[in-house]
Image 1 (cartoon, each protein chain N blue to C red):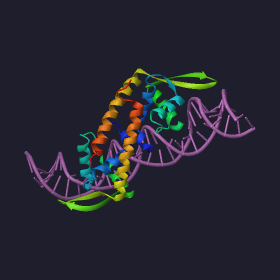
Image 2: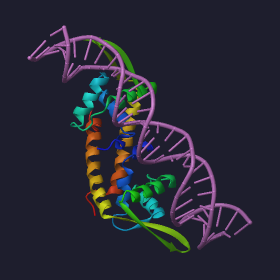
Image 3: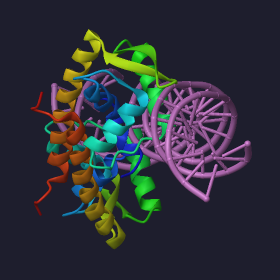
Image 4: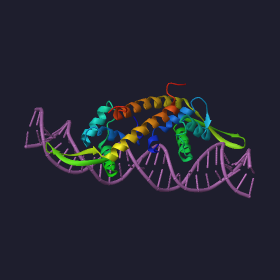
Length: 108
Length: 108
DNA sequence: GGATATGAGTAGACTGGCTACATGAAGGCG
DNA sequence: CGCCTTCATGTAGCCAGTCTACTCATATCC
């Protein structure tokens, strides 16, 4: 899967994995990997800046903790993030319809 | 629909509309607009550079003609373009599975 | 002692879609 | 005639997000 393909689709995916429970960065990486069936193996240079961006934008809130001698920054959805996730899901549906309307998969 | 979302997905869409018949740039724009239900209204600053890029890459071949006093550059798929389109469609299926696996739409 | 897993982060490159602009002909309208 | 809209192609330069490559630090297992 090409890197560019993710553009603009990563944000809702990140928000989605912290929807049900707050997670720290490393756990978010693992959750994305697991939910995508091993396809979405984000480099840290992508994930961490993305998380900070989403926090700056007000969609995530973070909190430091120490577990087993290691520092974690745990992120949770804000109410703005919840709304953003909902609209992101809606946009995905639109986007999918556009692409498939043009590609017409399964058609000559 | 955000602009970034298109990143990496535009190329197969362009190839798809010239799959059945060669078209010139302006007609490609209209075809994309029509097939997407009015959602995909590409600026010329996006489409024309993309076409040249795809031609440079060997996926499209172009030919000039004059119709009604206006010059047209008509593009058609090369055999490499046909293969590229096929793999692009396959990549789309994968990408869709990844996004939906993470987003889990219609699920809590 | 060394490798691996956990955990967070930055600097800088790359790239493709965008805005804004330039050019020109055909055709309709008042 | 002058003006606008549509058709038609194109470039220059901006911008933002993902990437590569790196740093730093602890815990655990061999």
